Length: 513
Image 1 (cartoon, rainbow, N blue to C red):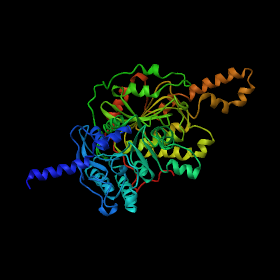
Image 2: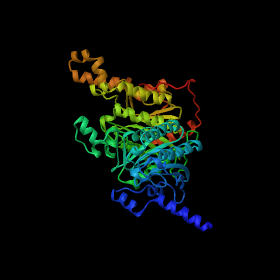
Image 3: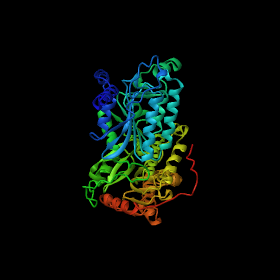
């Protein structure tokens, strides 16, 4: 045989691994792309290097070895995303429904271990019918080893899960262990499917109603990002990777800014009403301050009373955490606490400074919140801010009341540089509520209770409910004009980027249960 013959046979095998036109047509009819089409969108052109292309399952696992083919239902390898090395594994639904067997799992784990060894992000593209029945416990063992690899890589390299089809049963726990989950409108995730729910719980529910992308983006909070289709989803993955470092020992990618770091923002005085009872969209505040108005929101559709996401300030990546007065008046509830806590820990892990915008009347009251564990979740939020050693900047836009002031990156939680606008209200509670508690009898006994109440409210406002008392105590570092917010935050970021902080030596802390 000549070399040409050897090369021809190699090409034949790789052509089998790549799948047929019929396989592509089947995926396209479902409104989905093939594994390799997805890889081509995720990675920079002609940069992906596939590994384990010719892996096959153990022959004895199947009736005569039928069903699988080269690659065993997953495409794995490495390449460039925005010019930086990234590893990925994309399940191929055209091979036994993308089901996971022993060698399929080995390929994914190998790519994950390589990503961890070389300090590169790992992206898992999920489209699988679940555990491969023919392989029994070998399949289940494969899942367990993937979970272990997820845990080992956690906090060291960014791990992103992209759900582009079915992801059911034990398979959902690998995405659940990763940093971010992306879903499309026609993908779904659940522990037990509709048939089991119908049989055991007597509930009639569809796949979409039980665990569709929109449900997880709006109700459960499992999905951080929701997209219409594969292409849009994978472009979002590329966008997010542009804000994350390659690993926990690296800094996030710096992009030379086009935006003037000294730019003033007079529009902020119009965006935020002086009346503390009027709502506004805090995302407009963020867009006004950050570079080029670009803000990548995380968990956009879930717990909307808290806004979190990534932006740049003078070219440096920052994580934004902000109360949203447009929803529940910006109060903090269980879901908002969970959302902010996870995001803060992500930022701290990957060396991303945190900027907090406060406009919060307090924690959401009610039996639903108390029974649901708001104490526990609020404590977790405190723990996250206290634990974070990255630069922590904070700006009070309007209200900062009670325990919510303490929780949101206060000096007591080692906030670095804290500012407030001149209209800010910092107190245990609002003036009217304080007067009603402290001077109830005096107001009732007054000749004109309404007038006396207003006098006391004005007096309380002057003495306590303003930023100058906090400034006098050093609990905030300065009171600033709204239009100066960008340039002051840029300057504060520059001086805190060299921050070095260490906690008391310990194996690990114990976050509230």
